[in-house]
Amino acid sequence: MALRHELNERTGHIGYGIRPSARGRGLATWALGQILLEAQARGMDRVLLICLAGNPASARTIERNGGILDPRPDSAVLRYWITLGQDIRVR
Image (cartoon, rainbow, N blue to C red; front, side, top):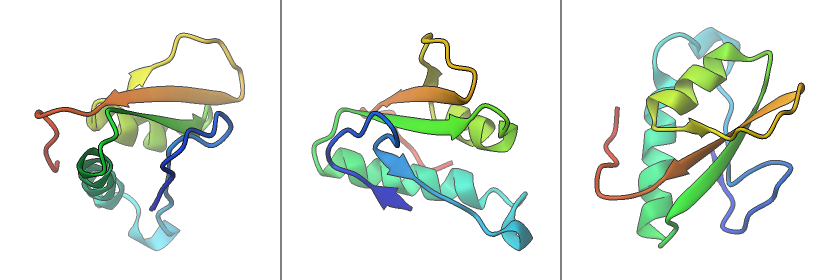
């Protein structure tokens, strides 16, 4: 997991990856929840996450953690915003 404190429109605030042998166990969902708690603790109120349009597993992970799809059309990537608040909880 990587938390970027300043917005990078190309990569977003948060980056993550799960090795192939560990996928499908909920680790990415859990880890993203943890990094969202850290972002909130550091005073961030909203974060941007970006995933490839052809990566439905990553999109589901982001959506499970409250990600709202940015309506800007882009055929290559999906942009999600997560608003941080008191309802953040580890999933």
